[in-house]
Image 1 (cartoon, rainbow, N blue to C red):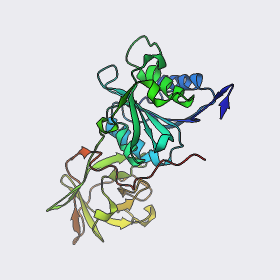
Image 2 (cartoon, one colour; image 1 turned 90 degrees about the horizontal axis):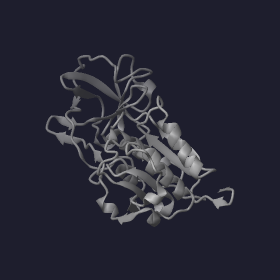
Image 3 (tube, rainbow, N blue to C red; image 1 turned 120 degrees about the horizontal axis):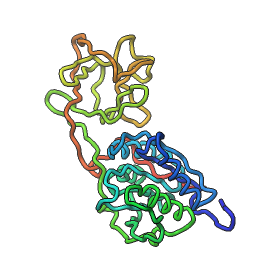
Image 4 (spheres, rainbow, N blue to C red; image 1 turned 60 degrees about the vertical axis):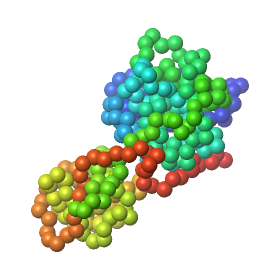
Length: 295
């Protein structure tokens, strides 16, 4: 792909942030990328990550990573902007893609999902940055121009000091735990349909009907393979598109479903208090998938 006399190394920048759409932030970052690398296509993964929620951003990026086009991934959920956290670029897939963003755990689960890092650098060379009037918008002043320079063929090593990829800040991904009273799990995500994704591998579920306990609330749930298999007024447990178990209700919101006493007998299965572990210990449960090769 070429623009003028510049042949692009990467033709796509996939962009995720917590910027929302109510301010100009997303449009400005997109314009900086496209202004420095004409011809690049910017794909918006999402800008609806809750403000400052690094874990939510990391999980959304990890869910997306195996399906993104080879290219540059620009991810910004950066509550420590302007502080001591590093700005980094991480190469994966033998150079097929590069992830750019803050080194605060945002990138680590996605890197793990696509097979690990090949190289990493700290973005210390200010010659590839914009001269911003402040230090609060690294998405515009650091990450966007770096993403564009990578698209234009600048080598990762030219962008700053080399880092040991093993020293990048790990993501914090909660891990379910089997205890005497059942399987303790955590809610990872509630999507716009009200489906409640849990940090549970389908292999950990018992067969048949189970009880789901959230605090003092208890409901019976059926194991199903499609939303419409959930009986009217009932609650289902479904393997979702990310390969995790979700609580679902047919054509309604499981997150808003009323509590009801469970019919006996049923096996107990209990989401409970949060637990966490580094992503390196256990990344998101779907199988690791290499970044797709460019043709």
